[in-house]
Image (cartoon, rainbow, N blue to C red; front, side, top):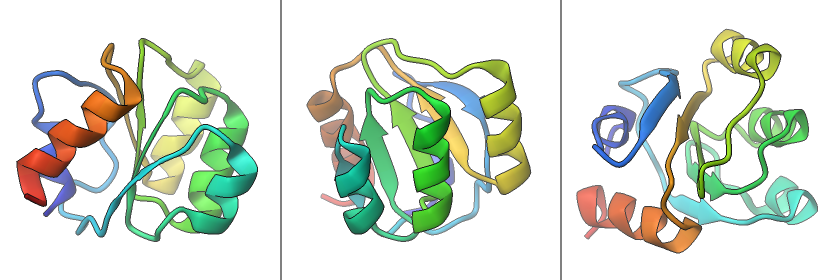
Length: 110
């Protein structure tokens, strides 16, 4: 699955496009940054409600391809600018974490 398939999901708002042709390895759900730091897969899509600058730092460290902020969470403009610089896609949705992860799974992993 490519990132562009996730970017096209109608339930998401694109905040930062990232690298649309990047290959996606897995879906990862976690709201605890210390666990995400040690377990988030490289080239993965991380679905979370943690909408702060530290989320971006962990995504950068783990080489996450895309962060999907669930339940209406968003990031401030400075953090979005940093995500743009680092090529990390950021999406936002009003869906709960599980529902969003399931939609991504059904789109390209099922």
